[in-house]
Length: 250
Image 1 (cartoon, rainbow, N blue to C red):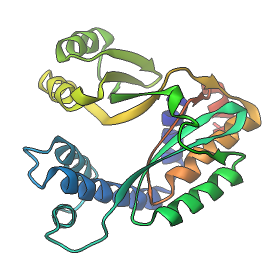
Image 2 (image 1 turned 30 degrees about the vertical axis):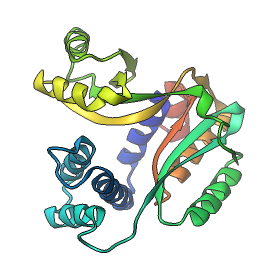
Image 3 (image 1 turned 180 degrees about the vertical axis):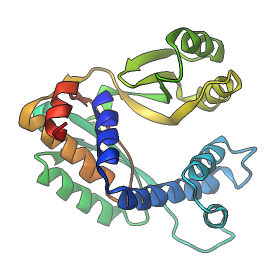
């Protein structure tokens, strides 16, 4: 989803950082709570929690906030219990969307996401609407400016990764989902500076969109991502560099 990541970079440069940071903290806290609830509060024994805490620290989240989130997950501190959800939908030009979320109220979340899809020429579908078009994989991003292809290829093979791809400004390394945390640890041990790592839905094929459809697809991603209950948005559409420049006015 190179179009998605490039668009996010453009938006960050253009502002609205405070609001985006607040939403990011909300998503990170929910991930910490859920990871601790599922796997316990010991980071050494819970790779998902360790990753979530490291990401929170990377965003300068206060240690007390992280500690409270872990306590809520383990039940030591009372708080809302979040349920992991997955929604499927369609957008312009036959684009397909998967939306991962965490919610304490399924009915509210599905109603609000349905409205977001409808406002952006899309439709929230039922199970099976979009999932068939994606593979469930571990994904790791690395800044191309900091990692050469030769070094990445050698380290990725040694770490047990399945594949890597050129996604514009970043390399994307893909792994079996069960081996993500092992590959992350191996790449870190090899001294590679890693970006985001997560278990993702990777499109089997991409659909390039342009013109008004490209704008609407990007608006739909933005609107979904801004919803507090949404953790990640995946889609099979792609937008060329030229189109992104036109849309952003750059």
